[in-house]
Length: 278
Image 1 (cartoon, one colour):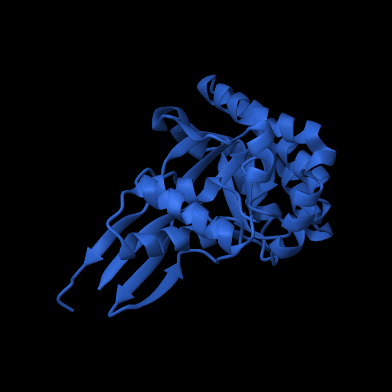
Image 2 (cartoon, helix red, strand yellow):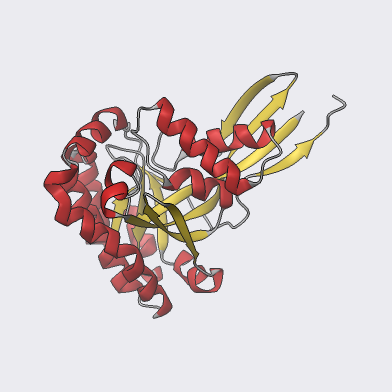
């Protein structure tokens, strides 16, 4: 038996600019991180099965984590090669309706600005020393809403040219976000995350629902600086930037949701158990 462990991811800025339909023409960029919540893939006698620490299809790149984890137990490839193979596999399987950030982050692990172009991906790792203080300002909640990704992404891709200015603004945000982290300006980081969510709703109106809007409003009223729904939208997990002294109030305001503490992780996909004698 072989068991792999692959981290899930939280994407802060630039999501949407990592689709080849966009970045092959204009270029794109994201800022994202992997977290200490995982997908586990087990392989035994030619059969595989999997499990997750958190609900899948919730905006945390669970599908890419599974693809990467399956490749990890089935091959001896290095993690970077696995990320490339997983990207090709998923984009071919979905007719191009998957971006290029999730496979890379889940495979390699850590915090990265990734810049995309038709020439490929350029990786600008962000030091953990800069990122660690942000952990104290982040809150992750399961909204318990079902994510309608199949409805959202196709219409978003069809209308990219109509939203050229918004996408270009989104591609600027990863660099701005990291600058705020270097300056320890977490309030501005939170406000930028709020702006990113407002832009996401403009390019993909189906990404939100009345319930999600109410959750965001309640969080802001309780003291959150900003936040965004993760992944394609429509439901799943929401990440919030909240001053430490306001976090208990936000928990109470969102008491119907599931609060999920987390930390950043740096290892990426790895084999955690191997016994070929079984």
